[in-house]
Length: 222
Image (cartoon, rainbow, N blue to C red; front, top):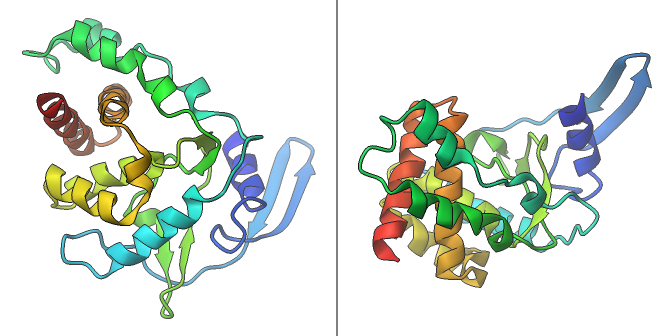
């Protein structure tokens, strides 16, 4: 219910991007929400896809929206994932310096601080592209306020998962999105935190491995 309420409330911030709310009622222990019906297809994030320009335009639109009243992402990001992984799944961190990972992880919350709207879970299926190339973004269960580059950084990981190299994905973000507002150390802290979070709460081991590979690449570049 909390996630659904978040999704219903997101429409007031992203009118024309999120699906419009047609009705919303609390009925006893139920929350009933009706959303605008959308027709379209998910985005293609492959390296040669024409959809990448539409995705970039959407990221810029979202990053321009100030939402200081929305709960900060930094409030949700607590540094403890890598220590938990070390205790529960030491095989994952073989060859890694947990102290170094924790050092970067502890810097992540401060690094993502800001007042811009952040979706926090963008991937190809969250973009609905219609025949006129209009883009909607769905599934607003976890919106937050944060730095304008955060959704672009999440998208970099998804691009790598779709076949881009880390350097190619970052070059795309640097040229087309608010990525340039991020300091290198902030991006590294972000990558280490997300890799730990996704490994610990992995619903997709392959995606978690992509996030880990990206963090490893960032650490080697730092």
